[in-house]
Image (cartoon, rainbow, N blue to C red):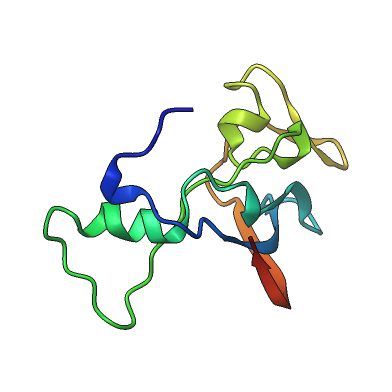
Length: 124
């Protein structure tokens, strides 16, 4: 892995233990299917680094602004965080149950992202 530039280095590279799941429900499906389970601890860049990178060129951040981390993929295929990864660039069907499959999202699909953490979720 490349060493981050000096302005992105910090002495406490902690992260958070947040369990995440993604489910997909097609228009014809009665129930959503879980397609991914991962954890925020797999983030390559810390939130401090992401905030710094976001603001280094003068972008203002104000209280209440939301930052999205982007795709969070874990080490196993079940923890891949994007449809592109899960379907191996569209070459592999993702089984949603009941005969439904996807390689990419379709119009009308509903995607739900859920996160759950514990009171002491900080990982050092």
